[in-house]
Image 1 (cartoon, rainbow, N blue to C red):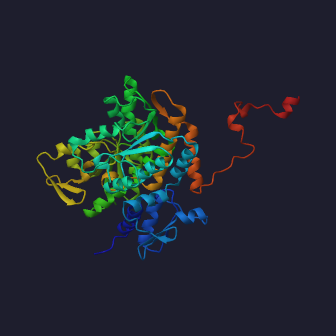
Image 2 (image 1 turned 90 degrees about the vertical axis):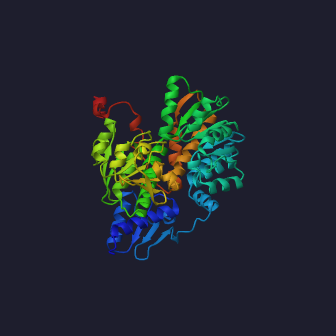
Image 3 (image 1 turned 60 degrees about the horizontal axis):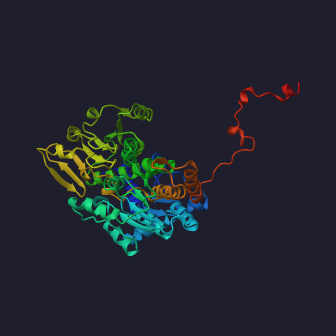
Length: 489
């Protein structure tokens, strides 16, 4: 069988991401060797935001080298090491979460969270475990909860072994989920770090927010109902909108979710002997997640179209070079990826018309699989991969949030930025005690996270010139400035 250079290049790239859970965008990467595989890999890496390595010591530690002749991949000059068990994966992630580590050290030094009860309700994998451990190291009393579908049981066990109470149980039956979530909330918290606002909303239903200093919210889909609660007068606690901070949504959604979802999709399709390259793909929703998903699909060679209900986002998609149109028409024979975070985004008709379907948004029922299966049957192809027997549509992980349910979540360095932003939000909640409502994280806090990240990652900032240093703050227009000659005339 003839070797497919592009597919081999893609497999090398996916192996790096799968074995390290690290990001491509912004990372120095070098490809060694000649020929079509090397050329294809160079093109993919550039399209995903990798950069050429410099001679700086910071780059030397971060650089990934691909040897296309042998298939060897090295990180910082050393072969990729086996991360091992859950404890090893937690430790590996912590080694590369230097921004969060720096912010947590500030909390510890200032005593900001000492003795506070902090609940962490998020997808439980190695990066989240490190967030909990960093908060505990800073002096907080921490407990962790995760939905069964979003729980890595080995990570949960490793976290308990390190002394952090963990109410995440991957074996929990659906009928028991509410009781488990309530038991976690009844531990009583000063601050809740939430993802999707599921626990924040449940606490309001049950009157369990009394005494809270507030909550922080990680996602767009979580902030939407919280803002509705605020409009209706139902919100009873301050919430910091972590998702809206530039250090979160500008990186997590576009680069993190984009990379992790698309590479997870490519891994699963490869198991079904389907390539993303030259595949007609439809991304539904062109918010920050959709932008990232579309860009990464394009980087792997897919022919990408976008369906979007918002006129501004549709215009942006068109100016980014994508065909934009109605989902019904564009779904025919396509790899359809929902990136909306809205239930029933992909209809049963669209599922049955598609070549394959997957979800990058992450709310229950984002694809209407229940009605698509009526009169048909799902047949297994590989792990996390099924096919409708009659329609022949490939269904990836039954419409679960693909990078969480079938992979290891967003890359480490991306979540490092997001969790550093969470730590900054916790600090702001505790120190400023804002009123009830949804609040933006202050510009100063976001700038501090960004500056810490730039410094720890060896990114040198430009210096403003002496002449320009005061110009932006001066209100007088330079166009009509009186010259020295006019002043003395």
